Length: 176
Image (cartoon, rainbow, N blue to C red):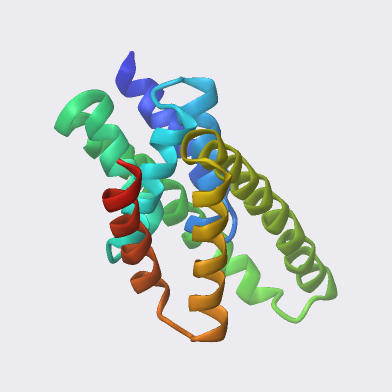
């Protein structure tokens, strides 16, 4: 039964997570944390941070890690396959249609309307992570990391992967 649950937990976000990994992360979080309760929000945020620190697509890395954590190697295989299968199937089917109707105003409007939805989902997820961080690390540590990350990314144009590695290092040194 756990293998079926793993498949469902990663197949559904793969189907409705239009926009790639960042768009499907809140959906994966819902399945893993709230629906099946395999992890807490804090554990999920740590998996997300670890996944962001490694190269490659975030959704498949998270699926592999969570699948392995829940059901070993077979669980990781099923979770990764469930993550990739919807994209593969839908790309084959939908790309033909989108290519055929690429100049249609309806198709352009559809893609323009999806972007705000993804932004809202990412905002809600960020709020949950901020809330969890505030509860566990305190407001001072949380604000320090938020302000430093913002400055490093936007003012000093540091590569996001270096900011992530720096935040992980800070957490290891000062928050563990």
